[in-house]
Amino acid sequence: MLPNWLSKQNSALGLNISDNSIELIQLGPDGSKKEFPVVEAWSRSALPKGIVVGGAIANKEYLVTLLATLYQKPHFGIFSSKNLYFALSESQAYILDLSIASGLEDALQREMLEAELEKHIPFPLTELAFDYYEYSGDKKKQLVNVSLIPLSILKDYLEIFKFAGWNTKNVELESHCLVRALVHAPEDHPILIIDMGARNTLCFIYDGSAIRKNMSVSLGSDLLTEKVAKELNIGSKEAEIKKRKEGFDPEIEGGRIFSVMQGELQDLILEARLMMKTYFGETGRAVSAIICTGGGALIPGLDRYLESDLEAKVTVGMIDDSSGSFENSWKCLFPVAWGAAAKGIFPTLKNGTGINFLADPDLKL
Image 1 (tube, rainbow, N blue to C red):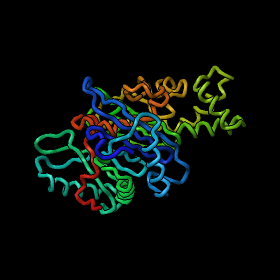
Image 2 (cartoon, one colour):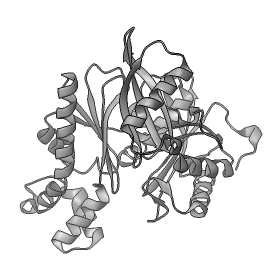
Image 3 (cartoon, rainbow, N blue to C red):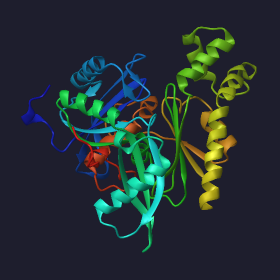
Image 4 (tube, helix red, strand yellow):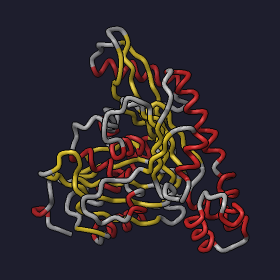
């Protein structure tokens, strides 16, 4: 570990912890490029089952040790920054839109929001941390996008980060970071973003100003492998190879792999269709573009399958990698961590930057 005087004060750590893996990345400013920061270091590790469950820490000691190892022994580069920007799992998060009176001072605005939130959230607000940002309105009404998470989960992570010697600067949700990493220009049409991890898939709509709909589905790349192994009565390694080779091609081996995985995707397809239909009914705006990222995004033919079933153009979302240290498959694993760290480099970027749970005045550490 580098001494404090060698720490890069202008660099930022981005961290994403799911139930199945940890991604840690360090970004720094590039004097020749103002659009994207540069990748200075990164690490990744799978998480054994039971260390993090539903976004909550179940084994602090193991997690502390693993984070120290990832920082001290990176896969690429050298970690030097202590400034941490963290992306929380959305497993137990809420995102919703509220309308309140315009022109209120911050304290009164928050008080009004608390009164509205009590009508929508089935938990006491004393058990939750929340932050919000304004995204539309007029002289009478202001539309506000609110994110909430369990306070106990947030405090557990902050305790671990303090023990690691990091200065936690920002805590937000995965969806905010994905927007920052994958949406590089203002959009005049709503985008559906699908992040397929190992065992869960995050799906939400970003309309250029706010995250309007979000959901999490129990579906992931590893679950697809397990289903293929079971249905074809083969080992998991062989199933993974077949999944990555044949994918969603109905012409290979009579479409056996395609048929199995297609069936597993139906819940995601139905939920995404409902989300898009509900959003259109509320706004009159149709989703015309989809970004698919995460470990499952590069399964052959998945983009074409989603494009056909959801009737919108699909692109694969990858991070900008100026270091050349990532293979394409790894570029799909780091958008959340990349987007978290990017906020520390370019804090004035508008895409997905409005939330910081540390700003909750009721958060007492």
